[in-house]
Length: 226
Length: 226
Image (tube, rainbow over all chains, first blue to last red; front, side, top):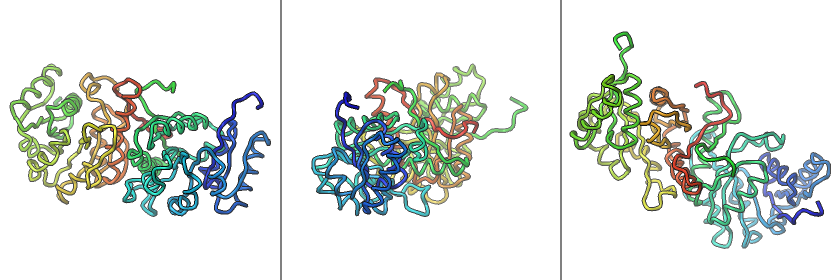
């Protein structure tokens, strides 16, 4: 990889979970430097080692704490269950100063996960924006993607809708969508994240009714050469 | 049409608008009795006549007031701009007693129509539910469908997500989706309507960025024999 341009370092916070691990795999494979973050650094190191083995050692992946990962990265991705959303944001707020945070969180409220139930801020991504303030750009993406396909390195028949606090942040996020082998669309301001987060409940509904596990969505009516 | 079973009578409230007219065309063509409703009955009569001509007189379509259409129909469909949503609901509330109302309204707030901005009830459909009370079943559908394709009788590459206050009402609504030549999906409770209404702003975003006019969505990962 000597002749390739220097790529960003991506922190995957909560990267020991299934979704984060799948995304980390895709980005490491694409040549990015990936830092797996976890509340428990030993777990992050184990995940990093597993991913490194899957890529035959031909990648840069390290495991550490969420704070250290966020501090050392150019861009951070938050992939924790909603119950750990606020706590994780608190632990990395300072480390994210001046950076982009891609929030993957879906605010499901068990047991009624087929019903859209957003927090008072409007969505998880808007909560992150409110809490992190103006010195962090927040985008939201990847909420509708099945983790199994990410890690199995199979083609994924589901598009990624990206919302965010600035056009620039959405553009950077769309680059990481493409690097993960997915088709992404700029879905507008962060206020639109309610649609994409809520779509997860709609897709869970469809999964249950049709006995499948990976209902997704595709944008139609536009050329897919993006 | 003597040997076909008796089909429902559908009231299309605000049916002189483009979306309502397109849906009325599809249902009349499928053999349903269609009543076009408008605040101005003369306009409804003109729309009915135009549709009847498009179908060479081989259909049942009449124009009248919104109240009379709602009162005489088995099921009603609300296709008015959001600015006329509450006022139209007030005019037909009594006439809808015991019936299903399919709300097609998208609460766009000009000029920022690319940004999701829902009313305090959570969505237009939830507003309708709150106002109409327990004696009317409310579903929401068709918010993402381009009217041009409906009236041109062309295939439409956009699925219809249906939410509603009961499974029964969603099932009835899905029958009308199929009758209009579209593929529909049960998207769960009426609280999920925020996703489908908000998706319209997301699709307008995509239209603007890609210079197209009919971005839509398709559900993937499930057999499309519905």
